Image (cartoon, rainbow, N blue to C red; front, side, top):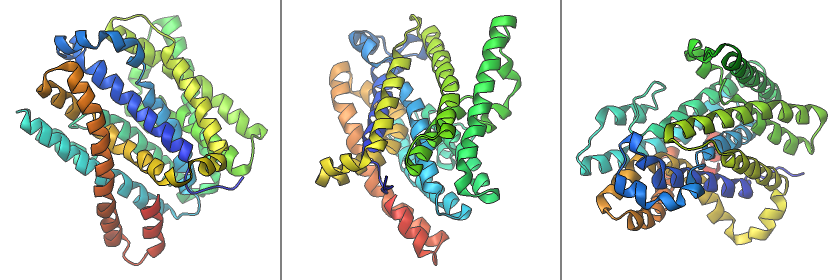
Length: 366
């Protein structure tokens, strides 16, 4: 199978995942009484809760996609180029999104300068102007793992990184379940920073993405690639169940299988999309550029939708009118941010790599 530069089906799934998270936050999570949400909005959106209350799985979908995309982007690059490329992908959009959120908060009389600074720096410890930035920290830890692998072993060994992450994560979740069932102890609280540095909670998702990339690149599912996917799955599924249980306890609802089913269905769609990439390119034809823009818009959409979207909806006052205006408005804003951050990113690349034309060209296209 010929490896194309872009995977259009993946871009569509990535945008759908961002939309799931956005609907979850703005039609449900933001208005829960426990979070100080508006009773008016909470009551208005109650009929659609079963359709959106599992949207948080979009984050776990992102992590699998990230494992695939980062494994792909690391190939044929020097460790330094990879690090610069990831930094120029993360920071310019984060600067714009954090500033947009700050502007909305200022307009509503709720300035958060400390959170803005933390978000501009993408500080691992926060504080952030919007709680969604925590996932970017997880991504950055994964990038660090990939960088050190490239530095000391080479990008072609990324399959072994998948094994390390899958085994660590599966062991973590297995021990966590046993400790809880046998001793009623949450042993993970003793791990502290190590839990984050070792990607114990989410490593299996990145490993599954790496397994998928390896299968696509090598032209099929060998025993070792299939084994990596199968070893990754238990950690993924247990994390999803634990997250679903946490959400149910927090919201006072019953534990539902909907999040796990949704994640599994989208995983099937993802695996199908990347394996039939040539067919998808052929069918979409001249729409390929627009689909690619949607894929690029998912990062700013994720960063800008929650805090800013919530405040704008509160300013509008009517729940359904607010939802109808804010959701498409945020999508359009995110597409605009893609246009704005592109020149900013290229300008940074000119500054940090003025003589490296190959790096600048590669980063301007991915």
